[in-house]
Image (cartoon, rainbow, N blue to C red; front, side, top):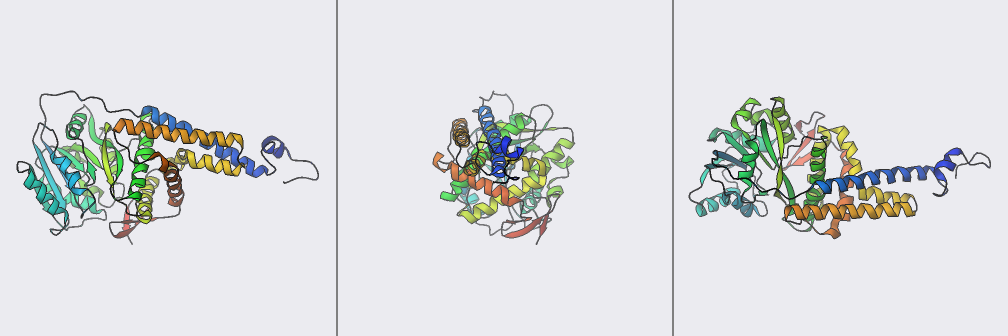
Length: 398
């Protein structure tokens, strides 16, 4: 205990009293408890905003749509995911463009089987190895746009699964006056064993509730890359895909460019499923660090503030620092309860469970570790290449 002679300092009397004989640690525990309490309230607020999708109203006419599906090799559940695209209950004409960087890409074999099962589908395949920037997905999309046949363009990642009404819902949302781009809420699904399920839980029970709350209170204008829709005219006005080929956060930048035209970017009130294929902890950490660094480069202040969303790790650390005080243990219990409520609300709203409640503590501790590690990296691994991420979010091949 720090003392001056035999008298305790006023610091110890006001902050250290009743919390042990280490006043500095007492201050730390109070700070941690406050952040954990705020994080717990954050979780409860997010949970309250999570609701099942509303029923979709019918309409008489449906516009023609082109779906762009960039592919990159085989993935777990690839055929099942792509099948959901062919199974859409969409009344209007649909063109599907699959794009690869090589005619030898094994994903094209899956496409061949699907087109044979669905001979009436309007399918175009584009294989082009041209690279005009560091972001290979955007290069792929740039190579595909020459085959566009329709005004409404939907970009969908290869690892997403759609409900049968997803395309209709996306098009209907884009049809509202002033809307320039629509993206979709999503939850994770583990497709490659234990660690892929852990990865899926971060999407469903931390990231997506945070997105929903941030959007509701006006702190964020999220554009989520797994599924986006906009008009071909809008895409052309923002420079097309080539304008974004050197950016890591292409979805965010596309959304920002659309808003720069005076249009709005909307987030769906329904959910799609995104497959997670991380086979081990190393792959999970690499993927999530790339994702986390992307957010940090986009919005450093907001990213730092997101520390408050890690309620359970903060409460656990506060309990340790305080020596297991009753207050700290109570907040820890409330933090755990809030996380269980978030999970229950998300599972009910989506009709899908990304993982079991028993894994929530592990998932939350890992998410907090990824958050901390983000401050110490400036490079990412992506599809076999290593890039340095600059302060303005650009990719530089190392």
